[in-house]
Amino acid sequence: MARFLRPLLRGTTYTRLLHLWVPMLVQSVWMFIDPARFWVPALVLVPVGLLPAVRVGEGVQARLLLTPGQEDPDISVTPSANWRDRMRTVLWLELRMALGAVTSFASVWLPVVAVELTRCGWGLAPSGMPWPAGLEPRPAYALLAPLPLLALYGVVVGLGSVVTGCARRLLGPSAAERLAALEERTEQLLERTRIARELHDSIGHALTVAVVQAGAARAAGDPAFTDRALDAIEETGRAALADLERVLGVLRESERPASARPTLADADRLLESARASGAEVDAEVSGPVAEVPGPVSREGYRILQEALTNVLRHAGAVPVRVRVAVTGGTLCLEVRNPLPAGIRGPGRGSGLRGIRERAALLGGKAHTGPDEGDWRVRAELPLG
Image (cartoon, rainbow, N blue to C red; front, top):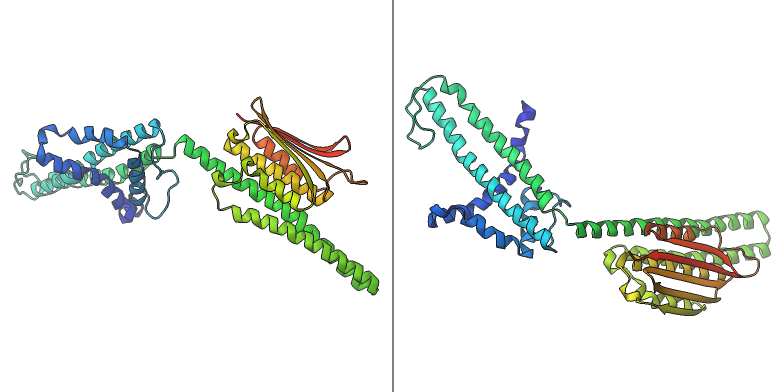
């Protein structure tokens, strides 16, 4: 019994009831103007629902009254972006008015029926209400009095749940909004993975070197060895600080939406940064790079950033050739630099794996490794 009555103790039940009553305010006013044409407000809702801003107001109202206390992501609060959204808004307004009419009728007349049945059960004559009519005083009617109240309970609780489900369906994010949210989430996951790789590879390595060198210097007890150990710790620490600053730069960007993240149109600052670090960068860009779709352009920027970072970290200030080309529905990125003597590759870090993961995420592919005396990073990303 307590579980059955629990919805009556929730504020959400009554805010949903208020949400169902709101459309009836307009209908009630119209009934004083022209009750014969009661369908006019429903007809007026069609052009109103086609206005993009109406979807915003309906979404805000639905969140406040149908799901109070929480920002339901399944109820959008953005303007209609296309005709599909507009038609969904029109359907929502019509459905909301229909459910409001049922709720208002039930809220008024079901309690009246319960009162009339109670009066007749106590042997009193009906009060003269237009409905129900023709009841005669009988004790058996007292047993039927709770039924209208149970029906009212079902209408209030049931239609409240129905209108909430319809709001999530008709006012929910469009396909474009869901794609943008998925893109944002994917970008966040990629950056978190990248940050984890960078911290593990760079900071973990620096701390390990510092601990080992400090322990060895203490055990050796040799001033010359201690000086060399301190030099190694200092050099490793400086490199780790530089990597940490770069990772913190990514963290500072994480609050920006995916659409505001750097794209290949911002690649010049990567190239200038590499030149400022002493690298000789020979860059060549061909094709309509500015027309590359947002997700592909953003991932291409990150791949180029990672490739240049690896060059500076593992090869130092060496000549670098950068090629960016858009041809045949494919974005091609290539970064080449000479391999220092005695070094077969750029180490065991996971940056190269991250490049391959980014390319695979977009349905492309990436190749990394030695090539004719150079270290080459080449990524091919489909634009479709």
